Amino acid sequence: MKPIVLFVDDEPNILQGLRRNLRGMRGEWDMAFANGGAEALEYMQAARVDVVVSDMRMPGMDGARLLAEVAARQPHAIRFILSGQVGHDEAFRLIGTSHQFLAKPCDTEVLLASVKRALALRDLIADEGVQSLVSSLRELPTPPDIYDELVHELQLPEPAVHKVTEIVARDIALTTKVLQVAGSGYFGVGEKAASLLQAVARLGVERVRSLVLTHGIVARYEGPKVGGVDLDGLWAHSVTCGGLAQSIAKDAGLDDKAAENAFVAGLLHDIGALVLAANQPEKYEAIVAVSHCEDIARLEAERQALGASHARVGAYLVGLWGLPDIVVEAVAHHHTPCDCPGRGFDVVTAVHVAEGLTQAHEWTGPDEPLEKVLDFEYLAAVGVADRLSGWAELLTGMGQERDCA
Image (cartoon, rainbow, N blue to C red; front, side):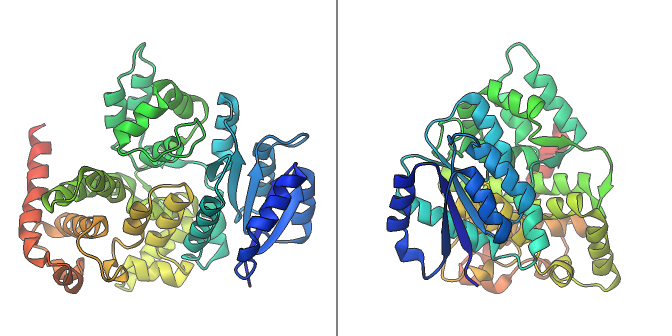
């Protein structure tokens, strides 16, 4: 069955232009066109839509209000806002209701690529309940110590951008949301930031303060476990993996942008596990129990229960929120880099190695057999299997630095 893409605007000539420019997609999508929010909701009463692309400024019901209704009625639907420059208050309303912002005038090829990408990512997950969980997600849990430290810094008379960035970089949820908002176009900053520091600087401390304190982009979470997952362990593992992936990327000769993407992807590689554990705790706790009792990999237990692994769930989320393609790929394939054939060493490889080395070290120390966690055939194919011992030393050095701090 072809996906249904619903386009909404209050100007008939714009809808006619979309019909004309997108007619080549009729073999791939079923398309519907609604003149305003009320007509869009009426259409949705009789049809299940997969994507909604809405103008922002429409009389009666604007795009933010429409997409909020879409999220409530059909939470699986992917939601795009298509608009010119929006005001400060409008931007904050859109962050909670839309997945991505497309700036007007929007080139047809950009629109096509954005919708195609979102649908391809959604197809990573077979279970519609999990699709709905990810597409309706507004916030993620963050550790109380990191949340409180960030709030303290943001409430100072003159918060420091570098300090705010350093705190954000220690948390999965904060990093994801800051990169989503900074690269979205909601505040007119549009182009993807080259680094987390640049993302914070572009947004500005005042917007970060408002996002955290007023609009609740993250949730302060208390408790050692959720859904059978040790949260402190998950956060510590993710931070270590991100730092190691960045170091490996630099050591292998990747440029600064790729190294920054390796850090972000390494930090976020287990975000899917966080999403599932925090939002379906009983189901995920059962998955963890099956993994332990039947001695099968967590990924296999996830596939049996959900039809998708935490890697795919995480990739769908970060892709839906507009993070760079290479970050999405690295999150999706951090356990299975062989699914990205015909490529040399890149960010996917760096994250796979960092995740495997970190996991092995956490289990029983640096002597844990790496065959359990690394794809040696893949690493040999890209010509880096003989560099693992040197990269393991980078991890040891990171641990020594923390001990001395």
